[in-house]
Image (tube, rainbow, N blue to C red; front, side, top):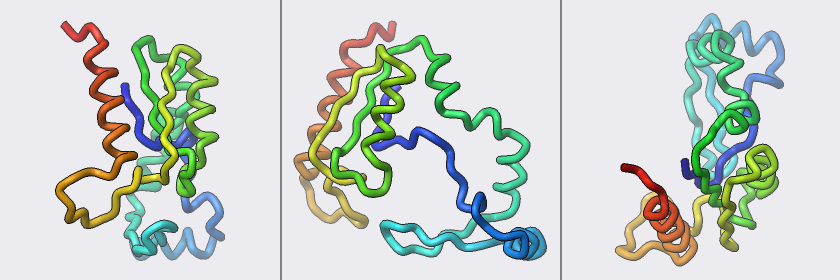
Length: 141
């Protein structure tokens, strides 16, 4: 398994919403959440909340990673403002055999959307290369 700038806990935007917003969400079927990095208004449909409640135990990342018995590579930018580098450290703490690969970069490893350049930024190139090397080292036969 390879993670790129992974979260270490499943936080929900509705966890801090007041009851009035939750009732409106249920009635209208959609609420909009502002992406902190891009400022995009992202639709969240009420069925997402229902699915989350029904399967909440499956979203426990600590429990999930502790249960894995496979090689893990955790790639993370040390300057990530969207998902703090501490998330990578938590994954490593919960799965001591995991390998952590860091680059001095942001959440998207120097990329932006849309990407018009032919070459990847050096940070993204390093993450791709580390990921490919990690996969080559695994016995996938």
